[in-house]
Length: 414
Image (cartoon, rainbow, N blue to C red; front, top):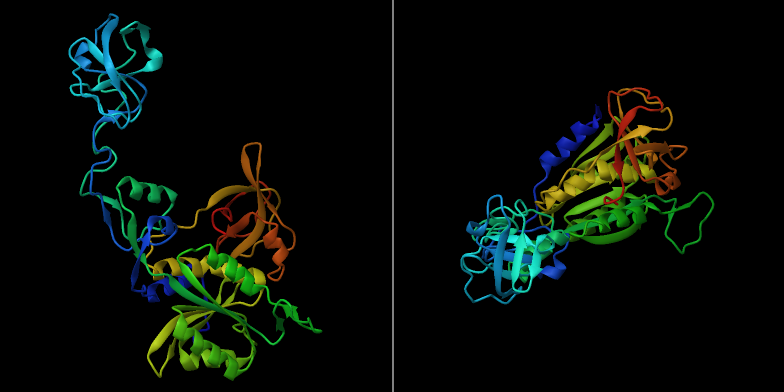
């Protein structure tokens, strides 16, 4: 059993190094592919755009018609519409009225935007410098060339990706199968919603917080296993049930020093689990490893999160989120961090990473961080009232008002 304190970075790297991505794919319509993980590279079957076309409403002509230092005058010989190719001839001294997206007429390589043209009957004219050779023309394959990678395997598909797939004529796509995640809370003091709240008991909030955070990751299939009581038999039964149905198990509670020893005993009985004390606040105690059903060889990765509500959220974003991306072979972008100026002084002890809850407000053009009051790990209201977490690094000490810190905004994350 591992008991030494680890830094946040050490624990994160240790977790990621032990993960093996799940296998399996499924084919879905692109409307159902949003936020799913692309299973294979998508190669463009066509040039995008397929032909040279106009980027603007205006007049298409051959750039050899441009007059140097003098007004250029051209005869209008037709109109090119998007989706309807102009089949006439456009020769020297001539132009074609063209709409945005319309295929460039043969021998035309330049488009004059309509606002710069003077129209007199069937003649258009414009002064020197109004347009240069090749202006306002999109070239065939400018966006994508046939045979090139349009989207790489592992990409989490966003709205623009669905549009890109549609532009290639792709109606269905192979994505990774959903990662199955089971989660439950542990503790005799916990009550589910709708139950009577006996003296000394509390409602289980962690499952709902975990549900919300996991649901945001749409490549995950959830199994809510409720509240598991503090007994070796109940815990082992819950673990074995989860192993049979899930790739990952998330628990909250029962991993602190001084908690009931059989919680740890059950985890260790079923697999190899490290119990870490991590140099962070909140969220110091955490368990990670792999548990097995020795009867049939099935297994699941296990994250034993702390019981305090804020610590559950902090450890999820510090460790679990990136692990879930890796387990699906997703090429996840790092969690975005922003710089913010402190509105007040903050006490910070060097030697641990601290996550402080704050409101992030734009004041006079500067993003400013205001703490949301008491920072106890059981005060879930402070998370609800905040816009993000201030990430105070391991070696940092006390900070003063006006100091710059890194912040993790919740918008786009939770």
